[in-house]
Length: 185
Image 1 (cartoon, one colour):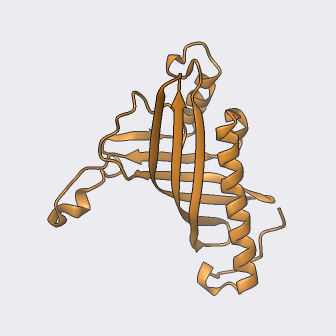
Image 2 (cartoon, one colour; image 1 turned 180 degrees about the vertical axis):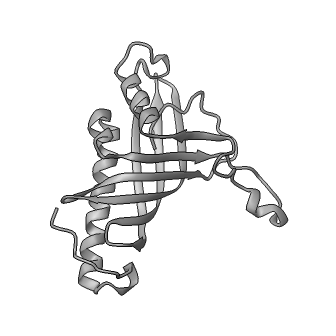
Image 3 (cartoon, helix red, strand yellow; image 1 turned 135 degrees about the horizontal axis):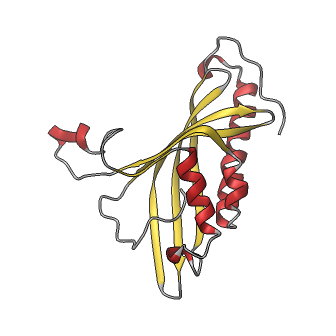
């Protein structure tokens, strides 16, 4: 990757078009690389892309009336499928390599598709990125599950690349029929 364009007190909208294109390309490549690492079960290598202050969170989605639409997703601090920090994620990653991960032995096969990545904010050090994802997971000989939704990430500039400082995952599903949520999104 090339060096991130220098910015002082600029927002994403104020960048020159060539700098926006370059930064968008770098973000896209980072997200594709991350998906490749997860799909090829290189979890430790993926974990090296995680910032020490990561917040990895997946709220629960509910079906609500339009009058209560603000309650569609649980809030931070309420129940969630994931509410992980660096230590929690490290334990999850290491569990993939242990014999105590019954839900991943034999291991799942995943395909992460990431699209519609949009940089919504940039302060020169961190970017807010919203993207759509579709994750297909097959397990054993006859189990196939699909997850899709949006991710709201904070990427922190780290040399010529980024670190994942935040991932908030909003599933399109209100009912998850999978037997576990052991995969990383």
